Length: 101
Image 1: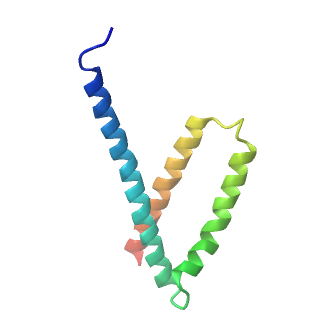
Image 2: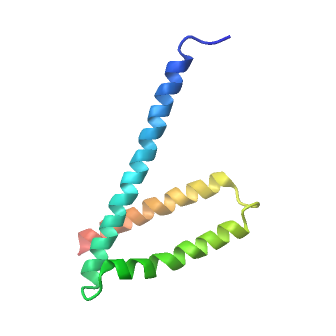
Image 3: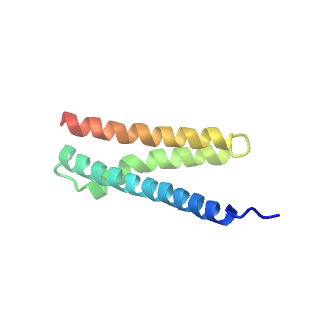
């Protein structure tokens, strides 16, 4: 038996989820731009396209190796919460560094 408002509620939920995912993409893009500007100020002789991969890549590869090795033992809920927490903290640190400089 179908409930009359079920389709409308699903559509609204889908819109909310898409909006949240879109915000996540926008916030990460803005933080990446802020990082590029920060490294341009910090290292004026080097272009940020050279500095950023050298700093970012070791952390990305190390976390990928750890997550791949312990894939079966990791709780997905805790992994997601840790990832969002690290993302929030890194964005907050960028804002703090921008205010200090």
